[in-house]
Length: 363
Image (cartoon, rainbow, N blue to C red; front, side, top):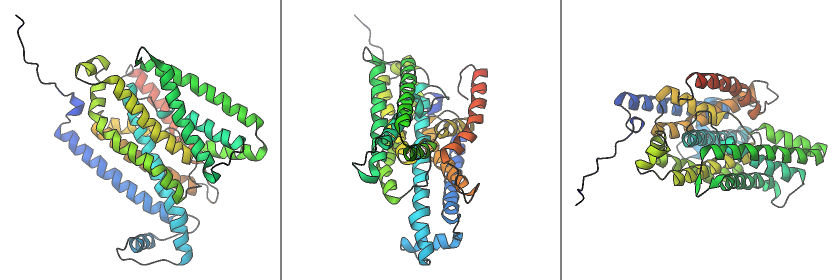
């Protein structure tokens, strides 16, 4: 007769049960990031070729929201609400999407060097946008390039995932190698489109690839808003399972995590966030790599803070980056993607050396 033994309670990993000190640090970091984001948003709304004092920005916002304040003159109102604020909001949405996507990718792959571009999302979106420009497609008017980039980005991720599956499972190494191959193929397609494009199209393609928020409008904000909100709302619900996955695939399965289903869900969330961001802002690198790693060094590897914190941190970084892009070389404007790459590349090399010294462990 088989004896029945009561199964012990499933323990939570240390990352899932942060001590009081770490919870306090998480609160301080969250408040600090929120304060920095608010301050940067207000500064970005006021600083530029047409200066708007901070008090006037607050007064206009209060007036529009029915909380008092007063309206500004016609020029100031137009600059603030038609140019500056759409750009600020778009920077926040794109930065939050890229930061959150980076944290999810690093959790799924178990590697602090992972970022959304690894599985071909950015390259696929670039193929869609460059192809639309080079072929002169206009079937959706001004939205053609944006929609083509978004659809191509999502399609590329699905293709990479389908090609890397074998026996109903997807190995991380196979997924990465497939992503590398697809990135190379996408680069070849972009080269072909550039070869056949005329000078005007090449200029437009180059501007898009450099990454910028200069063309921000309220319709673009509304286009990316549903994807960003959906992805940012879903991501934190997977935090505990990501903490368990950090223990290894086999222990995570033993603790009740359906690793394959988790990986599929998170790859789709990452694809949604990244494709929407790239479609409206072009290719902006290193935000998804830099932000989660800095927060991990500051507060540890627990995903309950890391996932939403990376969204806040990404928003702060991109808001600051866009403000710098508009003001550092004024009256000219630096491409935002170039600026983030210039600042992110040295950090990447430092991170690579640091990770190698730790033999691939988490920071």
